[in-house]
Length: 85
Image (tube, rainbow, N blue to C red):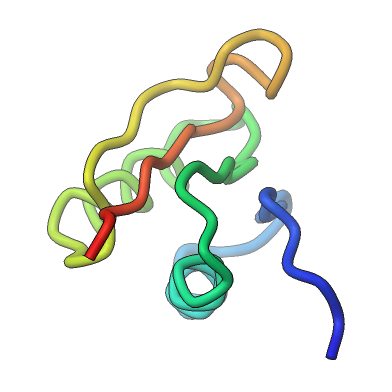
């Protein structure tokens, strides 16, 4: 079993490719006991960032999310705080 990282890189993926990977990552991170993770989506046109954040806003495992700090990618990444069920 490979260790769970706290970052998912979605660079270069379409929304249809990225969302299933994001879903799997969130559940894997939650089961591993992580409370904060980062999703790198890049700056680009903003389509992936917008759709990913729309998805996160309704996700049952997500407590909150915001633009990452500059250490974790700034506006090219999103910091996600997972719920503590």
